[in-house]
Image (cartoon, rainbow, N blue to C red; front, top):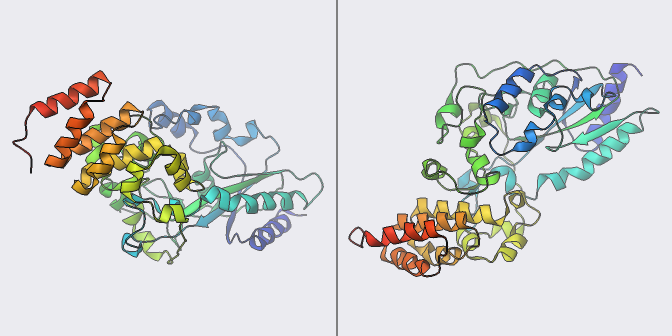
Length: 376
């Protein structure tokens, strides 16, 4: 088969499996190798240490798989719902839109595996491997090279027809496929995404400091969240969509609705704080929230509760004050102290009796010694 004939055959296989947004990029060294190494050197990846492993694979996958000739790049839309579209009893507080349905890895895995197998059958000896978030690839650069869109100033891929509410997947193959033309940048002078970020996670256009990103802080980061970021987190329990919500290109996104799993659809802030870990695990099973784990979710929920200052959450916070992790309890005490109510003051006073961490105990005592004059 010629490269164009092979490409036509692959595109047909993709469409037969429901993949409509498909483009092809030729294998080769990345144009952003030096940038990626500098990004790691600055520590912008935070605690995501896996990004440091074998960077030469990310710069050119042929170091690991010398047989790769082409990348079949796939863009997968997810539901661009607005907060006001959500039912009143939906997840409270906010959860990134891609995570409001069943975990996309499980949704697309069977179709991607089937596509890989079908591509291997095209010609004798054809090799192929599918990946989604798990391999040593700079997916967004490859997607831009293939013409699926361009990397916006918020570093996410933007499709000129439908915006950035997209997930990416790929199949690396030994087939020589006719490549598509790369996409050109259409952000222009717009800085809406950079200006809207409440934690100033973009030190410059097209550069993300993950250590300041709400998505990173709520999902990947273990331990306490720095006080400077807590108010800026607002109501985000898991992830953040702010930089995408303000992007003008997302006005073109077609409405889409994904049914949330029952356990997630009824998961309120109160329940995140008050449920036993094993019960919370069952609630988030099969969703992207599993990535954060129960301890991080409770920590996040406590910070959101502190931002809301809703005294109705005091009983749930008091239950969370018995959490095994000291950094979770610290977030709970921070939230209670921000409530500024007699109920919250009383809850902290009771928590002081069983707090075993010396630093946290001193924090509580210092707060209690300030007296009740400031209470509502």
